Image 1: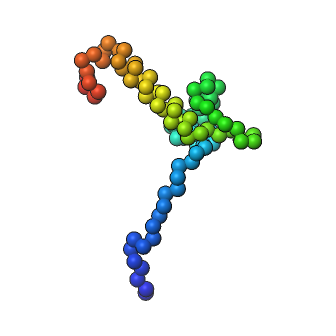
Image 2 (image 1 turned 180 degrees about the horizontal axis):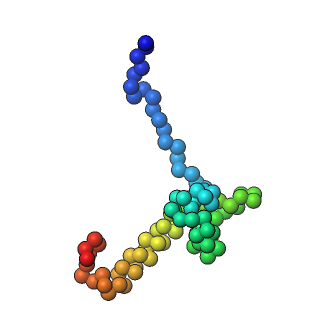
Image 3 (image 1 turned 135 degrees about the vertical axis):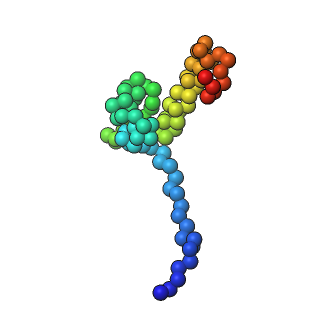
Length: 90
């Protein structure tokens, strides 16, 4: 049997998608499709149309997550129960 060199095959990771379908975006956020449609209707996440197909830009998902994190940090600072506690301490 001919021997095969280990490591001679390189695998490249494809770049992340620029646009997601509704099910893909919901899965990426770990939420239901129904919840994603609610967020879209409330203009909390933006989308684009390509023909009749609705797509969610990857940047819109990141913007939404960044906004959630910022709101969480603001809420933590305003919460008097958190005074005197550092992250992870209670």
